[in-house]
Image 1 (tube, rainbow, N blue to C red):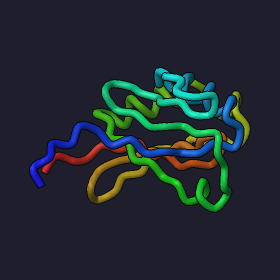
Image 2 (cartoon, rainbow, N blue to C red):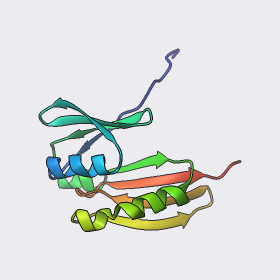
Image 3 (cartoon, rainbow, N blue to C red):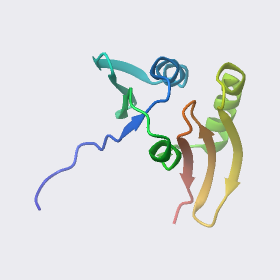
Length: 122
């Protein structure tokens, strides 16, 4: 194939669409409303679609990995947002070091697990 990929945009669901919209705005994503039940959230050239659709088994098995330039700084910024006190079921999990790099974790209000990671230089 001789195609040049431009982006990849996963679709994720929301148990409560309005709460999830506010959560991702608080994370710093810019919302582009596409339909009454579908929005595109973007930040620095990357993004995802949030839909007003919820199937527990699907959400409970959804994970998104977002590479960041500094996990330590990103974790501190997430911690400062105090999201777990603003949103029920949101949990921020401290940085873990792996053989490939470091990551921290954030569960969104619906249960989607976000991995924010930084790879070690080869």
